[in-house]
Every structure is written in structure tokens, then in C-alpha cells.
Length: 340
Image 1 (cartoon, rainbow, N blue to C red):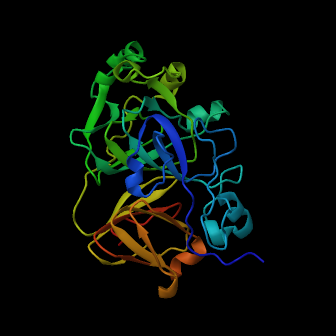
Image 2: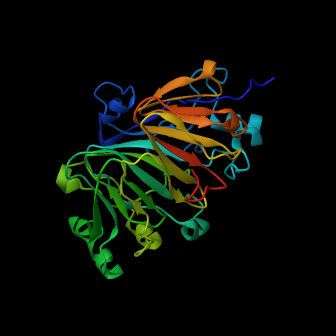
């Protein structure tokens, strides 16, 4: 008989990147000595062979009665008790990929394919994503979309060269800022930014420029034709929410793939959306205590990611131990902006 479901933590998958650094140690990640780590995959369940730089594509439960289980194992064993009314991917995998990103240098200028492109290119996967800034050095920036008035011809002429950077729209980066990036949006995470990324389960990336001249990097493949084919020159850019210091809950985004709320508290109870659906919590500031009862409650510091199975949400209590910020991520039945 399968053991009962409770709160689950997973071993992070650490991904080396030429633009990475060591800052994820501050968020509880045990990095290999002298390795430049750009990504910690907190929850991942991708088909084998579909990741570019990650040696492992399936997260494993860390500790407890499900130690070593993958997300696919949990879906296959528990079904709706684990996933709620959400559906796995067509291959039976978990329908989200959650990461922590450390941009010690600028990430490549890139774009991800949308539904239309994926429909005619079976070897690619849709990628829509959201960034929540955890930390940012003074002067750090995010590059999202193009400046007003930029034409497709200008992009074609500049792609693959440093001139492309001058066409991008920069945003100053501050801890607590939120940006949503629909598929087809050109973007680059700027140097000095640490971010939590929520995305659809895909590692399909089309690079348009890789800062090789600025950083003297070893050149990586650019995907210019694919990028231009899927690029949305003027996507919906009304997807930025600046940081707030006010206690309370706010809805950050609700998409066809996931929704996300931010909870901030100086101490006390954090109320999850009361729907019997799978939930993920990412502790972005401070410390929380969470469990299905006081004897079972555990302390989770900044950098922790906790998965709450659908059948467990109603029994789960979350309390801010100190000044804390928590991202709550769900798959279906998004709360309204007025809830919470």
C-alpha cells in the first residue's frame, strides 16, 4: 500500500551555466566546489533527452516515506489525490518547471516558442514563464520586449550582434518585482539578478544574442531563424507588478497554465487559496512553518520549495515565523484578485 500523502520537498537539480555564479548558496543550495551554477531546478519532470545543460530532468523527493520518488511516480500512484483536477502533460509528466536563477552575468537574449510554432514543430515545447526577483545588485536590469516603435526589419538586421541589445526594453530590477513573459516575448535576465522562475515544462530556448563580445564567452549556437519565426514583436507588456512592502496577499498572474500569488507577513498565519488543488510554495524571504498539524510542522527557510498535494491542502497550516514572503503557485481554478 502506498504511504499517505503529506507535504513534499525535493532535491534541487543544479545546472551549470557560463553566466552562473555562487549566489544560490545564500538560498540554501549546496553547490559543487568552484562550479558556476546558473539554475536550481526546484521541481522538474521533463522527458529524458529534452534538457540542454541539465544532466537530470526528474526531481526526486528528499526524505520522508516518499524518499526518492519522482513527480511522475506520484502522479501515476495517486492521480487526482496528488494533482487535483489538473492534467499531466501528454506524456504523463508534471505540468510545471520551477527554478531559482543566478545571473552572475547577462543571460542570452532569447525567445521561447508559442502554441502556433510548437504545433508545426513537434520537437519543440511551449514555454511561457514568470520571474519574481529575489535579489538584485544596484543598477541590475531585466530586458523584456522591445522598445516602442522597433520594427521587425530592425530586429532582423541586429539579431546576432550587440546592436540587438539597444532595441530591448530595460527594467530596473528590485527584490519583490514580478514580470510575466508570455511565449514569444524576447527577454534576457540581467547580471546581478537572482530570480524565482515559474514556467511551463520546457527547455526549448532560441538564442538571439549571447554577449560573447562583452564577456569573452565561448560562442554558443544562436537560433536566429527559429527565434524570428516565433517572435512576437509587441506582446502584452502589461505584466509587471512592482515590489510592495505591505503585508497581505496579491494575485500576480493567472494564465492558462498556472497562477501565482504573493503572501507577505511580519508573522502569523498565511491563508492559502481554499481549493482542493495541488499547490507549491516558494519561500522568497524569511522563514515559515508549515505542516498538516503542529506535531508535523517543519521550518522552511528562504529558498525552500514545498509541494502540497491536492488532498492535503485543506489540512495544511502555514505560519510566517518572521518577516516572510511566500509565492503560492497553483495549476487550475485561479483565485480572483480580491481573494485573500
